[in-house]
Amino acid sequence: MKEPIFLGPHPAQQPDLQTLMHAVACGDTDAFAGLYDAVAPAVLGVVRAVLRDVAQSEEVAQDVLVEVWRTAPRYRPERGSVTNWILTLAHRRAIDRVRSAEASAVRDHRAAVLDQTPEYDEVSEEVEHRLEREQVRRCLRALTDLQRQSVTLAYYRGLTYREVAEQLSVPLGTVKTRLRDGLIRLRDCLGVST
Image (cartoon, rainbow, N blue to C red; front, side):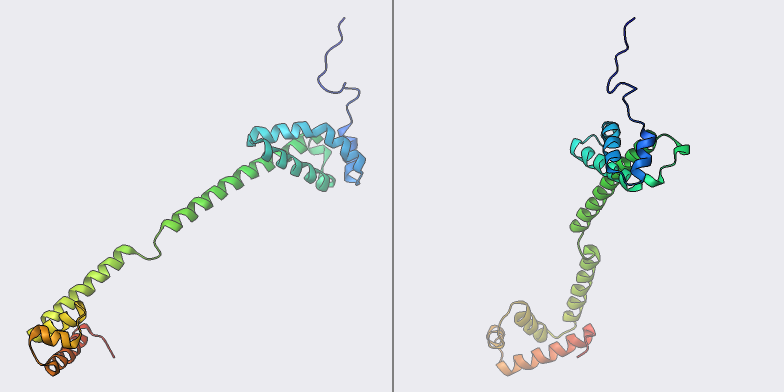
């Protein structure tokens, strides 16, 4: 009769994981090395099945095995085998990594959207500007012709008082008076306090 072919160590040569785990819980580093050698390939396999990325899988598998070292005293044999306990830790840690990556992507997307969002409401800002312009036009219409012409030339076209006087063919003093009176009437009409 032909002897069965085993992948990995012969069953008689496989370490007793319960015994190793008990020794690891007591701080035995040699026992941890044996446990590590026995379960690391399975841990990496479970993690890679979830993450698919080799580098991340190796990092998470390493984290899981460090967690096994730190939390070995919490292992309870009555709740399941050592392998199941460790592989459950591996699966949970891999899922946590996926969730963390997804949450990070959502945060990055929100930040990108906020970067593109104007700091103020453009619509309300535009409406406010239009209302202000309309109010200024209405108040300008309430001025006399000479006041309106003087204010328009001085403040909208940027002419000096002298240039306004030349443009309107009136004395400089008259332009100054009309501008002062026009600006007072505009201020009152617009409700601007001094």
